[in-house]
Amino acid sequence: MVHEIEHVWIPLSDGTRLAARVWLPDNAEQNPAPALLEYLPYRKRDGTAERDSLTHPYLAAHGYACIRVDIRGSGESEGVLSDEYSQAELHDGVEVIAWLARQPWCSGSVGMFGISWGGFNALQVAALRPPALKAIVTLCSTDDRYADDVHYMGGAKLTAGFNWASFFFCDVTHPPDPLLVGERWREMWLERLQALPQFFETWLSHQPRDAYWRHGSVCEDYGAIQCAVLAVGGWTDGYTNAVPRMLANLECPRQGLIGPWAHTYPHFAKPGPQIGFLQEMLLWWDRWLKDDDNGVDARPMLRAWLIDSPAPAAFNETLPGRWVSEPEWPPQRRARRLFLADAGLVDQAAPLEPLAVRSPLTLGKHAGQWCPFGRGPDQPDDQREDDALSVVFETDPLPERMEMLGAPVLTLELSSDKPVAQLIARLCDVHPDGKSLRTSFGVLNLTHRDNHATPSALVPGECYSVRLQLNDCGASIPAGHRLRLALSTSYWPMVWPAPEIATVTIHAGTLDLPVRPVRTDEPPQFAAVETAPPRRPRTVKPGLVVWDRLGGLEIGTDVHFEHDLRDNDPASAVLATRRTVTVARDTWRTRVTTTMRMSCTHETFRVETTMRAFEGNDEVCARTWDRTIKRDLV
Image: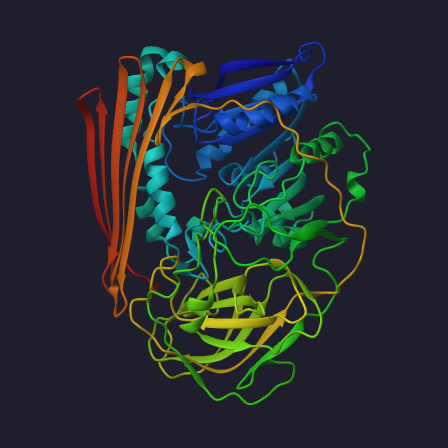
């Protein structure tokens, strides 16, 4: 049995109160349990309620006190939310953990888990070493907020950062629910609206990897994390590189798990197969919060799904493959080196006539989303059209199966005719029928060739040695297939174009592949999926749901997104969104409409934003931003 408390206030030292939902084992007051914290800005009341219903009650039924907390300025929590992963957010998290450890139903030991934002702040709070925090489970997160997050990739601007900013900007305008906070809801709501920052302006103002991005990047001091870390990712997700990197660099007890999944919890993620992930978490918590000698320590450092060369598709219910394991990471084996040559990708150094790469700006139609969620056609499909517009190097048909686990690395001697240029590398599995499956890819703003903190302009015509590490991958390439390396100077609409159309000339290069010996080891085993019974809202029509269990709370969402780019003009790039959200119950009705538009010249970015909020038919707040930001070699 589980005892659920819909709404609890957690007091902080500055007088602010954070809102929490609590699930307790039925006998927790008599037999205190370890506490598990999930700490997010996405509104426990309705935003994450559906997925919370699958997870928290299940863990509580297995002997853990589970707490879902809205961070400061979100959901029903008091205060104002100023940015991602602010110092206030992290310090609040430390206070919340201390409060949990003091509760009569808590044993004094605390774990923290979460996906995406919750995975980020689990790592960042762990680095602050709150005494009661013994272990974390971090999913689809990163140790490096600049290198592997939604904002930049290889120093190039990801358009996903704009999409995320437009969603988040609108999401934090939701009012708190009067049924929980009473008549103060209006005061709290207006305080948020009037203090709301333009988040995207901040993120776009920091184009190199400066102190802003170093904050919250636990890679700055891996040794700061001393509690046990289970790091989880999926090959279809945008954040997977952090898992092997943390395994290689953390000094605390740590393990990694990478499945085929998109940006979702593994017990309901697509592409499948899903696993009994809640049971995996229980084993982790039992070991580190209850000191149960259950064999978790003996598991391999990394368990990963090797994808077995499916036909390329923008959506997959499941991805074929098998589970493999690595006892340590990085593994002690040598990469297989291929050489770029006139004849393609070859095993020995061979002649290469200089090759000019100058792509149409709109190359990238088949890239899919930078961070797929697996809810529809958001993944890379057949790459042949993009390949045809790229400079390609290809192997002969493979004589035997090749398995890769890790990050391919491309090393090039190149020159550019412009001071700012970017290079995109895609590694594709070419099937005998010609279909091209993207196995990995990487992006590099060539002004970041030495490092991301101090970019420097290219000298046109000068030759540079450049290292481009592609995303980590787990792939099995059958005999008879070919490997194709496709190079381009653009990747729209995933990557914002460089300020001028550049020609990058390739003079020489090698490709190091993370080849794994084909083995027949006993594969890791996972339990079947188990969850608590789901709680879902009632869908009235597309874009409108009703939570009957929350007194008939209505949530309505309307989103419009567009992008445009002319092939001969990088300054024509435009992204624009319009979002309208209604939150209502009976005669209480609120509505917020936000718009965002990003455009550029060769020298600047421009971001135009509006927000209009209504209570009933009365406009209660309207704000406008129009900012021009200098491009810094981006």
